[in-house]
Figure 1: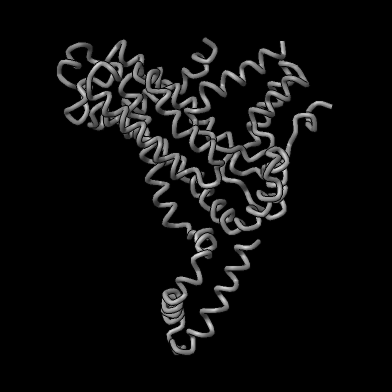
Figure 2: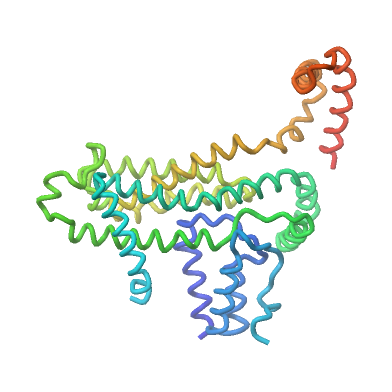
Length: 76
Length: 280
Protein backbone atom coordinates (compact mmCIF):
# COMPACT_ATOMS: atom_id res chain seq x y z
CA UNK A 1 0.00 0.00 0.00
CA UNK A 2 2.77 2.41 0.95
CA UNK A 3 4.33 2.00 -2.47
CA UNK A 4 1.29 3.70 -3.96
CA UNK A 5 2.58 6.84 -2.26
CA UNK A 6 6.13 6.31 -3.46
CA UNK A 7 4.85 5.75 -7.00
CA UNK A 8 2.79 8.93 -6.78
CA UNK A 9 5.87 10.93 -5.82
CA UNK A 10 7.81 9.48 -8.72
CA UNK A 11 4.95 10.26 -11.06
CA UNK A 12 5.06 13.84 -9.80
CA UNK A 13 8.81 13.98 -10.31
CA UNK A 14 8.56 12.93 -13.94
CA UNK A 15 5.49 14.85 -14.98
CA UNK A 16 4.65 17.93 -12.92
CA UNK A 17 7.96 18.99 -11.44
CA UNK A 18 9.44 20.22 -14.74
CA UNK A 19 6.45 22.51 -15.19
CA UNK A 20 6.84 24.05 -11.79
CA UNK A 21 10.52 24.67 -12.22
CA UNK A 22 11.43 23.50 -8.75
CA UNK A 23 15.11 24.26 -8.41
CA UNK A 24 16.02 23.52 -4.87
CA UNK A 25 14.17 22.78 -1.71
CA UNK A 26 15.25 24.72 1.36
CA UNK A 27 15.26 21.53 3.38
CA UNK A 28 17.50 18.54 3.18
CA UNK A 29 16.36 16.03 2.00
CA UNK A 30 14.06 17.72 -0.51
CA UNK A 31 10.31 17.60 -0.01
CA UNK A 32 9.77 14.84 -2.56
CA UNK A 33 12.55 12.71 -1.08
CA UNK A 34 11.09 13.37 2.37
CA UNK A 35 7.72 12.16 1.08
CA UNK A 36 9.27 8.96 -0.29
CA UNK A 37 11.09 8.32 2.99
CA UNK A 38 7.93 9.04 4.96
CA UNK A 39 5.84 6.66 2.85
CA UNK A 40 8.41 3.89 3.18
CA UNK A 41 8.70 4.29 6.92
CA UNK A 42 5.23 5.26 8.07
CA UNK A 43 2.86 3.95 5.40
CA UNK A 44 0.37 5.64 3.12
CA UNK A 45 -1.76 7.51 5.66
CA UNK A 46 0.86 8.82 8.05
CA UNK A 47 3.26 9.34 5.16
CA UNK A 48 0.78 11.58 3.38
CA UNK A 49 0.21 13.63 6.54
CA UNK A 50 3.95 13.96 7.16
CA UNK A 51 4.66 14.93 3.56
CA UNK A 52 1.80 17.44 3.63
CA UNK A 53 3.09 18.95 6.86
CA UNK A 54 6.57 19.17 5.38
CA UNK A 55 5.25 20.96 2.30
CA UNK A 56 3.45 23.45 4.51
CA UNK A 57 6.65 24.06 6.42
CA UNK A 58 8.59 24.55 3.20
CA UNK A 59 7.43 28.15 2.76
CA UNK A 60 9.33 31.44 2.46
CA UNK A 61 8.86 32.23 6.14
CA UNK A 62 10.41 29.05 7.51
CA UNK A 63 14.03 28.42 8.28
CA UNK A 64 14.76 25.29 6.28
CA UNK A 65 17.58 22.99 7.29
CA UNK A 66 18.26 19.32 7.81
CA UNK A 67 15.06 17.43 8.40
CA UNK A 68 14.75 13.66 7.96
CA UNK A 69 11.44 11.83 7.90
CA UNK A 70 12.68 9.41 10.56
CA UNK A 71 13.24 12.33 12.95
CA UNK A 72 9.62 13.50 12.72
CA UNK A 73 7.88 14.61 15.88
CA UNK A 74 4.25 14.41 14.71
CA UNK A 75 3.70 10.71 15.45
CA UNK A 76 5.27 9.48 18.63
CA UNK B 1 -12.30 13.37 -10.36
CA UNK B 2 -11.31 14.25 -6.80
CA UNK B 3 -8.74 16.72 -8.09
CA UNK B 4 -11.33 18.26 -10.40
CA UNK B 5 -13.85 18.74 -7.59
CA UNK B 6 -11.23 20.36 -5.36
CA UNK B 7 -10.27 22.67 -8.18
CA UNK B 8 -13.83 23.69 -9.06
CA UNK B 9 -13.90 26.73 -6.74
CA UNK B 10 -10.55 27.86 -8.14
CA UNK B 11 -11.81 27.31 -11.68
CA UNK B 12 -14.88 29.37 -10.89
CA UNK B 13 -12.73 32.10 -9.43
CA UNK B 14 -10.44 32.12 -12.47
CA UNK B 15 -13.44 32.16 -14.74
CA UNK B 16 -14.88 35.09 -12.80
CA UNK B 17 -11.63 37.05 -13.01
CA UNK B 18 -11.41 36.24 -16.72
CA UNK B 19 -15.00 37.31 -17.26
CA UNK B 20 -14.42 40.48 -15.27
CA UNK B 21 -11.34 41.36 -17.31
CA UNK B 22 -13.29 40.66 -20.49
CA UNK B 23 -16.28 42.71 -19.41
CA UNK B 24 -13.98 45.65 -18.71
CA UNK B 25 -13.23 45.59 -22.40
CA UNK B 26 -10.25 43.28 -22.86
CA UNK B 27 -10.46 40.65 -25.57
CA UNK B 28 -10.33 37.09 -24.19
CA UNK B 29 -6.67 36.59 -25.09
CA UNK B 30 -5.62 39.78 -23.34
CA UNK B 31 -7.81 38.80 -20.40
CA UNK B 32 -5.66 35.67 -20.02
CA UNK B 33 -2.51 37.77 -20.14
CA UNK B 34 -4.06 40.14 -17.58
CA UNK B 35 -5.01 37.24 -15.30
CA UNK B 36 -1.44 35.96 -15.45
CA UNK B 37 -0.02 39.36 -14.61
CA UNK B 38 -2.41 39.70 -11.66
CA UNK B 39 -1.31 36.31 -10.31
CA UNK B 40 2.36 37.19 -10.71
CA UNK B 41 1.88 40.59 -9.10
CA UNK B 42 0.35 38.86 -6.08
CA UNK B 43 3.52 36.78 -5.88
CA UNK B 44 5.82 39.84 -5.89
CA UNK B 45 6.17 39.99 -2.07
CA UNK B 46 7.62 36.47 -2.24
CA UNK B 47 10.04 37.63 -4.90
CA UNK B 48 11.23 40.50 -2.75
CA UNK B 49 11.96 38.03 0.01
CA UNK B 50 13.86 35.90 -2.49
CA UNK B 51 15.95 38.88 -3.55
CA UNK B 52 16.90 39.56 0.06
CA UNK B 53 17.95 35.99 0.65
CA UNK B 54 19.87 35.97 -2.63
CA UNK B 55 21.81 39.03 -1.48
CA UNK B 56 22.53 37.29 1.77
CA UNK B 57 23.67 34.16 -0.05
CA UNK B 58 26.00 36.09 -2.32
CA UNK B 59 27.57 37.82 0.65
CA UNK B 60 28.45 34.39 2.05
CA UNK B 61 29.48 32.92 -1.29
CA UNK B 62 33.20 32.42 -0.47
CA UNK B 63 32.48 30.34 2.64
CA UNK B 64 29.89 28.34 0.74
CA UNK B 65 32.37 27.67 -2.04
CA UNK B 66 34.77 26.37 0.59
CA UNK B 67 32.14 23.93 1.88
CA UNK B 68 31.38 22.84 -1.66
CA UNK B 69 35.07 22.19 -2.30
CA UNK B 70 35.44 20.26 0.94
CA UNK B 71 32.57 17.84 0.29
CA UNK B 72 32.91 17.63 -3.46
CA UNK B 73 32.51 13.85 -3.69
CA UNK B 74 29.56 13.43 -1.35
CA UNK B 75 26.40 15.18 -2.48
CA UNK B 76 24.31 14.21 0.53
CA UNK B 77 26.98 15.32 2.97
CA UNK B 78 27.48 18.52 0.99
CA UNK B 79 23.80 19.39 1.18
CA UNK B 80 23.71 18.66 4.88
CA UNK B 81 26.74 20.84 5.57
CA UNK B 82 25.31 23.65 3.45
CA UNK B 83 22.04 23.50 5.36
CA UNK B 84 23.92 23.69 8.64
CA UNK B 85 25.85 26.66 7.30
CA UNK B 86 22.59 28.40 6.33
CA UNK B 87 21.26 27.89 9.81
CA UNK B 88 24.40 29.15 11.51
CA UNK B 89 24.51 32.28 9.39
CA UNK B 90 20.81 33.02 9.42
CA UNK B 91 20.51 32.52 5.68
CA UNK B 92 17.08 31.68 4.39
CA UNK B 93 17.44 29.84 1.09
CA UNK B 94 15.35 31.39 -1.64
CA UNK B 95 13.72 28.27 -3.01
CA UNK B 96 10.90 26.67 -1.11
CA UNK B 97 8.37 24.16 -2.31
CA UNK B 98 5.06 25.63 -1.21
CA UNK B 99 4.94 28.78 -3.38
CA UNK B 100 6.02 26.72 -6.36
CA UNK B 101 3.35 24.13 -5.68
CA UNK B 102 0.83 26.94 -5.25
CA UNK B 103 1.25 27.69 -8.95
CA UNK B 104 0.21 24.16 -9.86
CA UNK B 105 -3.53 24.49 -9.07
CA UNK B 106 -3.59 27.76 -10.98
CA UNK B 107 -2.03 26.07 -13.98
CA UNK B 108 -4.41 23.10 -13.80
CA UNK B 109 -7.35 25.37 -13.06
CA UNK B 110 -6.54 27.53 -16.03
CA UNK B 111 -6.17 24.39 -18.15
CA UNK B 112 -9.68 23.26 -17.19
CA UNK B 113 -11.08 26.75 -17.59
CA UNK B 114 -9.64 27.11 -21.07
CA UNK B 115 -10.68 23.59 -22.03
CA UNK B 116 -14.24 24.41 -20.98
CA UNK B 117 -13.79 27.55 -23.02
CA UNK B 118 -12.80 25.55 -26.09
CA UNK B 119 -15.72 23.14 -25.71
CA UNK B 120 -18.28 25.80 -25.05
CA UNK B 121 -17.02 29.22 -26.05
CA UNK B 122 -19.15 32.09 -24.75
CA UNK B 123 -21.06 33.42 -27.70
CA UNK B 124 -20.73 30.14 -29.62
CA UNK B 125 -19.54 29.77 -33.19
CA UNK B 126 -20.67 33.29 -34.00
CA UNK B 127 -18.18 34.72 -31.49
CA UNK B 128 -15.37 32.60 -32.98
CA UNK B 129 -16.27 33.81 -36.47
CA UNK B 130 -16.36 37.36 -35.17
CA UNK B 131 -12.76 36.90 -33.98
CA UNK B 132 -13.50 37.26 -30.27
CA UNK B 133 -10.82 34.69 -29.52
CA UNK B 134 -8.11 36.04 -31.75
CA UNK B 135 -4.93 37.67 -30.47
CA UNK B 136 -2.80 40.37 -32.04
CA UNK B 137 -4.36 39.57 -35.45
CA UNK B 138 -2.17 36.52 -35.94
CA UNK B 139 -3.64 33.94 -33.56
CA UNK B 140 -7.10 33.21 -34.95
CA UNK B 141 -8.52 31.20 -32.02
CA UNK B 142 -6.91 30.73 -28.61
CA UNK B 143 -9.33 27.96 -27.66
CA UNK B 144 -7.95 25.67 -30.39
CA UNK B 145 -4.90 23.46 -29.90
CA UNK B 146 -1.55 25.12 -30.37
CA UNK B 147 -0.75 23.01 -33.45
CA UNK B 148 -3.96 23.89 -35.29
CA UNK B 149 -2.47 27.05 -36.80
CA UNK B 150 1.06 28.23 -37.62
CA UNK B 151 0.75 31.02 -35.08
CA UNK B 152 0.64 28.38 -32.34
CA UNK B 153 4.18 27.36 -33.26
CA UNK B 154 5.38 30.94 -32.91
CA UNK B 155 3.89 31.08 -29.43
CA UNK B 156 5.53 27.73 -28.68
CA UNK B 157 8.88 29.08 -29.85
CA UNK B 158 8.48 32.12 -27.59
CA UNK B 159 7.46 29.79 -24.76
CA UNK B 160 10.61 27.67 -25.17
CA UNK B 161 12.85 30.72 -25.44
CA UNK B 162 11.28 32.39 -22.42
CA UNK B 163 11.52 29.15 -20.44
CA UNK B 164 15.21 28.83 -21.23
CA UNK B 165 15.76 32.50 -20.45
CA UNK B 166 13.86 32.34 -17.16
CA UNK B 167 15.93 29.30 -16.17
CA UNK B 168 19.04 31.28 -17.03
CA UNK B 169 18.03 34.19 -14.83
CA UNK B 170 16.56 32.32 -11.90
CA UNK B 171 19.16 29.61 -11.45
CA UNK B 172 21.75 31.52 -9.44
CA UNK B 173 22.54 28.80 -6.91
CA UNK B 174 21.43 25.83 -8.96
CA UNK B 175 23.75 22.98 -9.88
CA UNK B 176 24.94 22.95 -13.46
CA UNK B 177 23.42 19.57 -14.39
CA UNK B 178 20.06 20.65 -13.01
CA UNK B 179 20.29 23.85 -14.96
CA UNK B 180 20.95 22.07 -18.22
CA UNK B 181 18.14 19.61 -17.57
CA UNK B 182 15.74 22.47 -17.05
CA UNK B 183 16.89 24.13 -20.24
CA UNK B 184 16.35 20.94 -22.25
CA UNK B 185 12.99 20.03 -20.73
CA UNK B 186 10.85 22.62 -22.58
CA UNK B 187 11.97 21.01 -25.83
CA UNK B 188 10.98 17.57 -24.53
CA UNK B 189 7.56 18.90 -23.60
CA UNK B 190 6.77 20.43 -26.99
CA UNK B 191 4.90 17.32 -28.26
CA UNK B 192 2.57 17.51 -25.25
CA UNK B 193 2.13 21.26 -25.14
CA UNK B 194 1.26 21.25 -28.84
CA UNK B 195 -2.06 19.66 -27.87
CA UNK B 196 -2.80 22.31 -25.22
CA UNK B 197 -5.22 25.12 -25.97
CA UNK B 198 -3.30 28.08 -27.37
CA UNK B 199 -4.57 30.24 -24.51
CA UNK B 200 -2.68 28.03 -22.08
CA UNK B 201 0.53 28.49 -24.03
CA UNK B 202 -0.22 32.19 -23.90
CA UNK B 203 -0.43 32.00 -20.11
CA UNK B 204 2.80 30.05 -19.81
CA UNK B 205 4.58 32.39 -22.18
CA UNK B 206 3.43 35.45 -20.22
CA UNK B 207 4.45 34.02 -16.87
CA UNK B 208 7.90 33.11 -18.20
CA UNK B 209 8.42 36.53 -19.72
CA UNK B 210 7.44 38.03 -16.36
CA UNK B 211 10.07 35.84 -14.73
CA UNK B 212 12.68 37.04 -17.22
CA UNK B 213 11.80 40.66 -16.54
CA UNK B 214 11.98 40.04 -12.81
CA UNK B 215 15.33 38.36 -13.28
CA UNK B 216 16.69 41.34 -15.18
CA UNK B 217 15.53 43.76 -12.48
CA UNK B 218 16.91 41.48 -9.77
CA UNK B 219 20.29 41.44 -11.50
CA UNK B 220 20.38 45.20 -11.40
CA UNK B 221 19.47 45.28 -7.74
CA UNK B 222 21.95 42.67 -6.57
CA UNK B 223 25.60 43.70 -6.78
CA UNK B 224 27.71 40.86 -8.11
CA UNK B 225 29.82 39.84 -5.15
CA UNK B 226 31.28 36.77 -6.78
CA UNK B 227 32.57 38.48 -9.90
CA UNK B 228 35.63 40.34 -8.56
CA UNK B 229 36.86 37.19 -6.82
CA UNK B 230 36.72 35.29 -10.08
CA UNK B 231 38.58 38.05 -11.89
CA UNK B 232 41.67 37.93 -9.65
CA UNK B 233 43.82 35.66 -11.85
CA UNK B 234 44.02 38.54 -14.33
CA UNK B 235 44.51 41.01 -11.49
CA UNK B 236 48.24 41.71 -11.87
CA UNK B 237 47.90 42.24 -15.60
CA UNK B 238 45.12 44.74 -15.21
CA UNK B 239 46.84 46.54 -12.38
CA UNK B 240 47.65 49.49 -14.61
CA UNK B 241 43.97 49.89 -15.34
CA UNK B 242 42.31 49.11 -12.07
CA UNK B 243 43.83 51.71 -9.73
CA UNK B 244 42.56 54.72 -11.64
CA UNK B 245 39.05 53.26 -11.55
CA UNK B 246 39.26 52.64 -7.86
CA UNK B 247 40.77 56.05 -7.35
CA UNK B 248 37.88 57.54 -9.27
CA UNK B 249 35.46 55.69 -7.05
CA UNK B 250 37.33 56.93 -4.01
CA UNK B 251 37.12 60.47 -5.35
CA UNK B 252 33.42 60.09 -5.92
CA UNK B 253 32.92 58.78 -2.42
CA UNK B 254 35.19 61.29 -0.67
CA UNK B 255 35.73 64.37 -2.79
CA UNK B 256 37.80 66.02 -0.03
CA UNK B 257 40.62 63.51 -0.43
CA UNK B 258 43.31 64.14 -3.01
CA UNK B 259 43.33 61.55 -5.76
CA UNK B 260 47.13 61.29 -5.69
CA UNK B 261 47.04 60.31 -2.05
CA UNK B 262 44.18 57.92 -2.54
CA UNK B 263 45.92 56.04 -5.31
CA UNK B 264 48.79 54.35 -3.54
CA UNK B 265 46.93 53.76 -0.30
CA UNK B 266 43.89 52.34 -1.99
CA UNK B 267 45.17 50.24 -4.89
CA UNK B 268 47.67 47.66 -3.69
CA UNK B 269 46.10 46.54 -0.39
CA UNK B 270 42.82 45.80 -2.10
CA UNK B 271 44.45 43.50 -4.57
CA UNK B 272 46.06 41.56 -1.76
CA UNK B 273 42.70 41.18 -0.10
CA UNK B 274 41.18 39.75 -3.23
CA UNK B 275 44.04 37.34 -3.71
CA UNK B 276 43.43 35.99 -0.27
CA UNK B 277 39.79 35.43 -1.11
CA UNK B 278 40.70 33.54 -4.25
CA UNK B 279 43.04 31.24 -2.39
CA UNK B 280 40.50 30.26 0.22
